[in-house]
Image 1 (cartoon, rainbow, N blue to C red):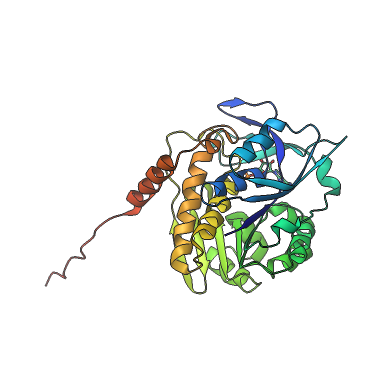
Image 2: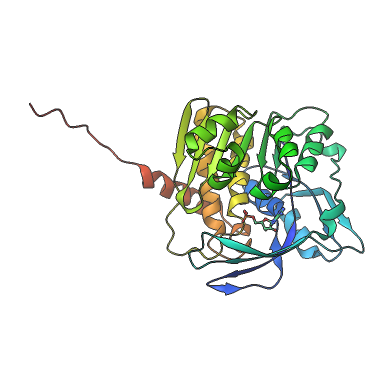
Length: 311
Ligand code: AMP
């Protein structure tokens, strides 16, 4: 099942209460593709970097069977750079710096070899570019998942609404769901957002898990309570990467399997936060992933016999 992932491949500099990094590898598409690579063969990247981007990371993608034909390398230009600092609670962060660099004139091109794509993951990016990618696909993919953020809601809402109309699954956080819908209740927000186009909505709630909405149905996946969250950067991208990776590998878009897919997304995101950047996500074994899934199953598994009424 072929999967195409679109989004940033970046340099990040991160500060958390546990420490500080220099420029490390980041970007939404990086996290998405790495997470998906554990489930699908030849996850394909569409992105752009500058000539300063390390060959070592391109080789790492290759070693992970991630295809980079659609990753443009712009000579004489610099890679997108983002820097953020987390507050003590690790739930909120401030963006310290965003340098668009190569992203400023990014024109995503879909190579011919990507045109058989059945699953399309549109990571956080300018909505007009996300729309362009959809329009560049000769055949409409079986599933399009879109991730976005409040930033685009504030400056490009009309374009964002156009792209939301075209997709199957939207993933946003609770604050963004409220902003997009104008509703505080997430249940009401979900109903309004589902009327905008997608058949399924995922509301990510960070350390409080994720909600899956479809039609009148709702399902909740917890986040694993970890002893230490080291660096939350990329968790919001790893999640949809694991989600779409699971759907692409099973080819099953039923409600029941969407439930499994958000557990998979949560499990993969729980690894990302354990170390800085992609350090933990990069080198997982299938056993570690299987063990983590079992931990999730245990977390909410209970057997309750409803007591008969006392007469
Ligand atoms: P997350 O922690 O999942 O929200 O995503 C963090 C990643 O998003 C970082 O690796 C950044 O490189 C990337 N990023 C930050 N700002 C933007 C932006 N405005 N557009 C696209 N990607 C971004």
